[in-house]
Each structure stands twice: as structure tokens, then as C-alpha cells.
Length: 410
Image 1 (cartoon, rainbow, N blue to C red):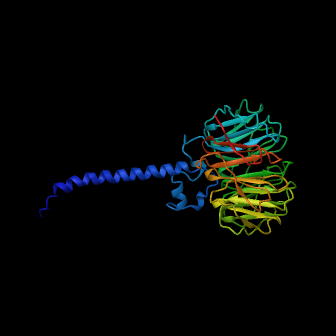
Image 2: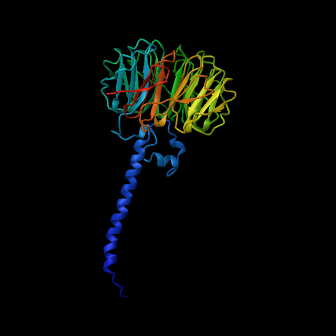
Image 3: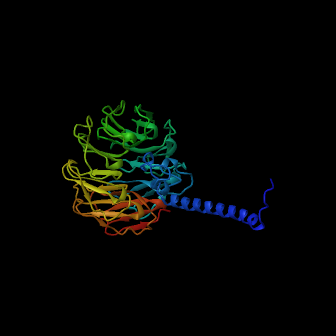
């Protein structure tokens, strides 16, 4: 059988069509890559809940979790801490970045960390001399001179460490992270030991009572861990959920606690974590942070799509509050009396309240809408505050948040 010869025009169009398809594919990849670059990487992103080609996946096609972030993608700031007087502070983030200030954040200097690993959290003792930072690849750094010099400490793991806490005297500390990792120290971080957690799920957050005996850690798949002996032994506690749990807080006596997470999950305990009850939140949004006043009655939670919830009865009932934004809010803080509070988030969002969260106002942040904010802290008087985020963004206020100013991060 003789096949008809293709026309000259058809032969000419075939390679042009191939070039057009390749160009279109490359353009789509570039656009998706640009969109992914604009998304702030975070270990709280619900990767376990997202599906391929879902809206969440399309919003971040390259990365859905911070621990999957490609090297060299920028120098974002994730962790922030200040001394109680607000004079000295430190911020940590991508590429081993550590920044410090000695003048209430008016000027910031880079401190040599000795690593290019991503640093996710930082904490200091009240005197501002001893501090610790943790992050990718089991990285643990410590300083004894306010951060003038940092030393790498042997963690014994290559897992991502997402969170840490220390007792007020700086003697005992704990770090948690990927694959159920829990590390502890009893000698100011000079040596660290792995503690059996009984789980392989990612641990998002950890908190301890001031005496360093009772502690709690939470994470993926509804993971809830408890210790009563300083972490020598950890028990898995039934949480009643398989949702990702992202944050935990307790009253100072260690009796009442709250945990928040995916799909509007709120859990509460009144017996030191022996038993947990689900509290109806009235939302299906991811809740990423929770805070309670010292009385344990008034509390607030924030999360995706500008969600803000409040309670006045220890969480027995929660009310949705109008935030005026659709931005994700990953962090919030309140003064101890529960009257003044602030929340920060994507697109440079800063919200504040002066009436215990009954009403919220947007505060001008003085930064680009692409500079997503990830962490904030305030002094106890509610006057001096700082927020950090993408691309080295540092903002400060000295009037309770009425005016925020961008500061040079170097």
C-alpha cells in the first residue's frame, strides 16, 4: 500500500508545533516555580492533607514542607526571641542565618553560625547570655556569650528539629522534630541524648512546666506525648483525632492545656494531660497557634484564611472573630492580662486588638505584600514588639503596634 506523501506545509508545521509545545511547557514550569518561590515554606503546611494537583499543591508545587525546601532558595527568618527588657534579641532562619540586636532592634548584626543549615527555632535565658538554635539535619547550636560566638553541638541525629524549649535556668532543654525525634540535655546543652518517643510521626511543638518535670509534645496524625519525669520516659496519649496537631500551651501549674491543629481541631485537658477532650471550634480551617491569658479562662487561636477564635470560659465555647483578612496567620501573642494582642501572617499582615480580641484592626506593616511574616514577640508592657519573615524582613514597633518600621537585617 502506498501512503500519500505529506505536504510541505505539514512537514514544516510539525517541528514548529513541537517547539510551541515545549515553550508552553517551559513557561508553565517557570510560572509554577515563581508561584512556589512566593510561598513561605513551613513545617506546619498540611502536606499530609493535600492531594496532587489540588489547590494547595498548585499554590506550592515545589515544596509543601520546610524540610523539603531546596537549598539556596533564600534567607527567610523563622525564629525570634528577645530578652524580657526588650534590649537584646535574635532571629534565625535560612542558610544558617543568625541576626542579633543590642538596641531594641534599631540595628541588627549578622552572627557567624558556622552552618548553612536552615535554623527553625531559637531561645535564650533571661540574661541574654546563653542561647540555643535548632534546625535541619539535626543541627543544634549554642552560645554562652550572647551570640558573639556559636558552637555546633553533637545531636546524634540528622532529623529536622522543628522546636525547642529550656527551663528558665538554662540547665535543662528539649528539642523535637521529624520521625518522632526527642532530644534532651541536662547540662546547658553541652551534651544531648535521644529520648524514646514511641512514635515516628513528625513532632511540631513541645512545652514543659517550669520545674522541667512535666512536658508535652504534639505532632502529625494526632500524636500526643506526655512525660512526668523530665523526659526520661514518654507516654503516647490518646488524642481522639488523627489530625496534624501544630501547637500546644499549658497554664503555669501544668494542669490545664490546649492543643490546636488541622481542620479546626482544638483539644483540652484539665488533669495535666491524662485525658483530652475535643472542644468544638466552629471552623474547619487549620489552626496554627494558640495563646491563653494567665487566668486560663481567656484564650485565642489563629490559622488559615484569617481565622481567629476566642474563648472566655477556658475553651468550653469558642467564637469566631472578624479578622478582616484572608491571609494565613501562623503566629500570635498576648499580654499576660489578655487585653492586648497581635497576630501576623502572609502578605505582611499584622492585626492587633486592645479589647481582649473582641475587635481586631489591621496595622500598617511598612513592607511588601510578598514579605510573609512568620513570628513575633512583644515585651510584657505591650509597647515594644518585633516581627520577622521572608527575605530577611524585620519589623519593629515602640508604640504598641500603632506604627511599624522596617529594619535593615543586613
